[in-house]
Length: 489
Image (tube, rainbow, N blue to C red):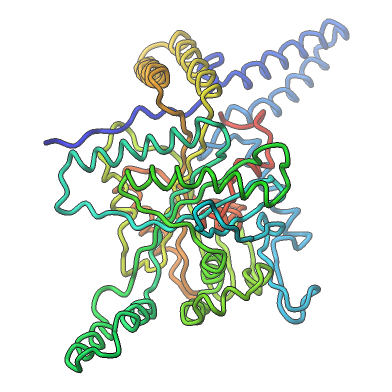
């Protein structure tokens, strides 16, 4: 049996004149009207020439794009970063001799976050992260993905279909802002392996069995890299008491069991992570040296730690990379989805662990739309695609016709009950300060190209992108500082 193909994704883009976006087209018309009015009032060619020059300066950066961004976006981003650098806002220092002694809070977008633990109906406890700036609430689920070896293709297709149904169900009510799926490669200290073997050995075990188990615990074979998977569900505030922690935990706990059941049907058995597990996760990602200590400490010690000590002692958010506690991280974002249809294994080259990139994190962020929003969006996309096709001529019309077909198919699928989702990918590689950055860049580009995925470096917001790829409640579009009026979409 042949596997299914997946595709038909389209980036929303308002259609304007001559292939431009609607906003850029209207800005151009407004500038033309301004020039005409200025000339009619003054009857001066000099004034008209000055207005024309000003209009060109304003309008040209909106038309010219580089790496998916308009000139105004690039200029605004550079200006914001230069001002932040000048005010030392990109530098972070915590610890014993900082302004808040003894605290190492998470920096940047997570500075006002809070970690709590509650009990869901049925007795299952879960950690809950509240990002106060956006008033979002996030539950992190630890996932053990089912391997696809010796699994029939129809079963794999069913898993993919069930995962799509899971995303559609989460977006139907409009309560879920985003679902972030994270697959991460980390250096294996083998402490968990030894702890699990020690737990399995009973006091009355024969000496030979003890020796075999001890050898298994001490086994140093393999690549020394393990895979960790998790899914973060980020909710909007639910109900009337939107900032009441207990009320939000109650509402989220009621919805949690349904999400876990749907993930199990998709071949992704999941368990909510406790507060101490989330703390350990975040602590070891910002400070690589803390990994062995955190894994050795276990629940008894980590459960007593404060969320205010989960962050780094120091960090430096540089233009093209992020320095934190003796480590260096680089994050890339998806520039364009794969061209054409792909199999379910499309991202496998990017997700597989590699010895030359031992610490790699791939986060797929799904931004969900409610049913009402989906209907409006697919209809608008279809109308824009039709308008774009009618305004283009020649070879360019082939791509426009394909977009019309894709948006028409989206309308039909949405009418049959499918959900509408915007998605993006963040790829983060972390290594020590002496790491070979050009080599890491080449490795990531090679892996993404093999996955038919186009990625670009996250310039000027490396710290924010690092936090977003952790999958703990940071949804970057919700923190955007540049107006959509000057964007490329």
